[in-house]
Amino acid sequence: MKAASKRVDGHLNDAFLAAVAGGLDRYHRAHGVTVEQLRMTMPINMRSKGETVPGGNQFVPARFPFPVSIIDPLERIAKMRELVAAQRSEPALHLAGPIAGVLNRLPDFLTTAMFGEC
Image 1 (cartoon, rainbow, N blue to C red):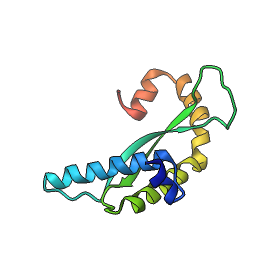
Image 2 (cartoon, rainbow, N blue to C red; image 1 turned 30 degrees about the vertical axis):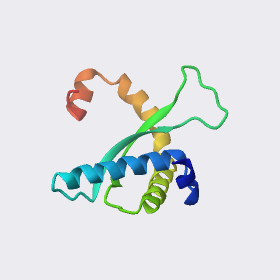
Image 3 (cartoon, helix red, strand yellow; image 1 turned 30 degrees about the horizontal axis):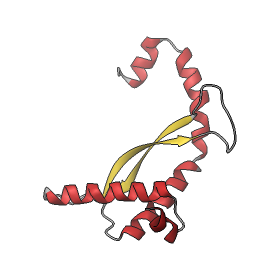
Image 4 (cartoon, rainbow, N blue to C red; image 1 turned 90 degrees about the vertical axis):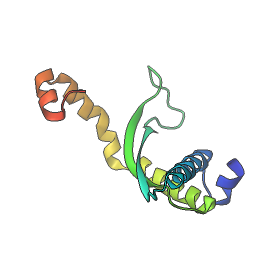
C-alpha cells in the first residue's frame, strides 16, 4: 500500500481510504447497486507538527462525500489524496474549538432545540 501511494505522491492513509472505497464499491456491486459516492467522517488532526498539547490529540471530525466507483486503484488513491488535502486545508476547521466552547456554555434546552437530542 505504501509503494502504491508513493506512485501517485500520496500517503499510506490515502491508500487505506482508497482500499476501503474499493471494497465498498465491490460490496454494493455484489448486491446489484452502483454507488458513485458515500459520505465519510474522518478525524482531522489540528495539532501543528511537533506540538504537544495537554490531554493528547486535538482533532475535528470532517464529514464529506468520497467516491467509491473509481475502478483504477492508483486513480482512487490520487483522488483520496486530493480529498483529504482539501479537508485538511479547510479554514473553518479552526473554528470548531471556539464554536464548541460557545455551545457548551448554552443551556441544554437551547442546544437541544437547535440540534435535537442525541
